[in-house]
Length: 573
Image (cartoon, rainbow, N blue to C red; front, side, top):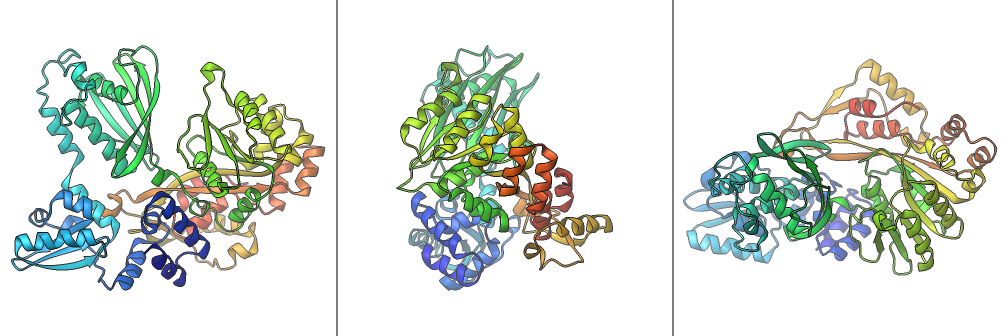
């Protein structure tokens, strides 16, 4: 099934042969469909994907607006059936039930629909629908706020202090699964995964407790609850992550794994004491959204070729730089996934291990017991590694050891805090690395940042102003001819006003912008003679390095992002 669909997508030039092979391998590895991976990573517009699938299966595709389906029609199919079989009731008359299916060839779903039709003594009409429609309809069955409100009402809270709440042993015990506190925590975690939140913030305020999700890089409040619930909710989370329930004076860190929607999701917990209780931050680590292949990162053209060339070398260091939260770890994992083969020994040092990957030897540093990046790196060299991943180069000793590892026949992948790729060499020299060691050890410098992706369902084109058109022309003139030969004026900008698919936000996820600078003979000479940043910047221009701004402009012209945000978040070089 995966193979036939992928072959058709390649045939229609919707994906490349290389991407098809990667998807097939990954789908087999994690036991999911290639179609799911394509949709989650937005490799193809979902309507184009549905159109191809419709013709392959011989089932007509139907555009559906979730908000136009009546409550009466929704009642004709249970939430459990909608969730489990990925079906949606679209319309119902006395003689006919019209349903949409994500997978019309799913025999279990077919049997379930036949049973529903037989029970109701009506005929069935079946259409193929897009995944976003199924998600929107399913959300109408289980609104998060109403579930939380029902759980809160069952507690019958009185008073305003911490003493008038469910007892700690009721929270900590594994009693009824429907216990209100347990239900609130479980429902919140599920909702965060469903909304693709990267973080959950549980925060005590003076008169209430609020829960916020970070979605697409922005924090948004999803629930407000009585302050009396705060302590038992935090206690429940501490039980799940094996933290000390009775310790609320100092920060604690922990993690746990839960199966949600049939997937293993890791949650990383950090508590922080405040005068009104412990603030709790939870990082949501969903491998289906956090792990990407190189092709899905947003590396295109020359940038992709340079990265692929560098990771295929037998030794040398690749350093990724960018601000906190710019996706550096995601890029590291994508590189490791590309390198991860049976004949390669990959060992990583991480703080913490964010995603567990089969075939890798991953280790978490623990500075509190003396096991830091520097000491761990010394031990890794005794493990006969081919590839070493160091989560971050934070100090002089780690920098020196990483350089030494790259010089002694290993591929070394790591991150560094600088503003851009040009600043990597000066930063390493500031960390007391001898300049003469860098030309032989450093292969590639990658700078990156994240900006919001426009919703592809509701984006609209408009003409750009003359000022922005001048900026675009100026940047295109600096780029390799083969990358811009097909780009002609007048230039278009895109905006997304909002629609049901993006919950009227106008954005859908985030996109990485990249700049990639390789070690050339000219750069080696500069580093050996006078490694100051202005000269390295001049060399980057000679290389025609695609800067963050130029990469963003290319993506804006293709309608992925807004040109205004690109110009706001990047600098001209």
